[in-house]
Length: 268
Image (cartoon, rainbow, N blue to C red):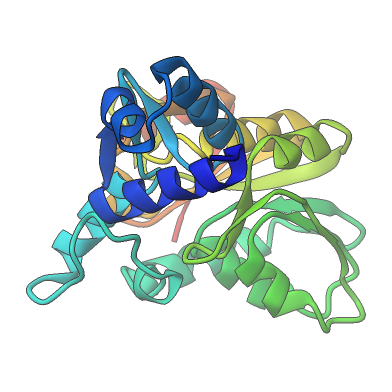
């Protein structure tokens, strides 16, 4: 069996089962466990799966489970990746308030990075017609701005995650290392009481870190539902954030920590 076909079958197994082991995959495909480990390493690097101890899992499994619980009875099974249009309406009024405030922080002539996520799509809508440059790996942002002659649009490369309308993988991070922006509008899935900013997508964590490194200023977009939120992938601390945009119900402890470190907090 050639490597491309083997890797296709690995992804198919993980898509259907949510997670699997190196041993199981090796037995199914009649190859050595070391061969499977090399396949998993390549697929993990490309953002197709999340490498775990002894196996691999679908990169979006945790987020899918969280959203399925929010969606309530009748939601898709937690091991199936939910589409972007199901994620987008969750807490939309809060996201709209945060997005509107964030858009005012972008000045004409700025180069701005818009992160993966749903709130940044709302920011993009507010930035239509502006004399700015937008860098993004968010395909939904690209769709909002693709026909806008005023906005210079830079779409990062990478592996397409169709359901989440984003680009991920080593190519995305590499492109970011060659760019410089005035600010990044960063999303997350949680802000802890100790000030840690986290995300629950391991496949997105290196890209978000690269976005932070590429920007002169970090603007964190986090509605009150992100306090404490979910996630184990550490992105940064509120100490590293220049501006934190949130809503009225956010935990005051990390907000004060951001202020104490010299950051600005905007409550919408």
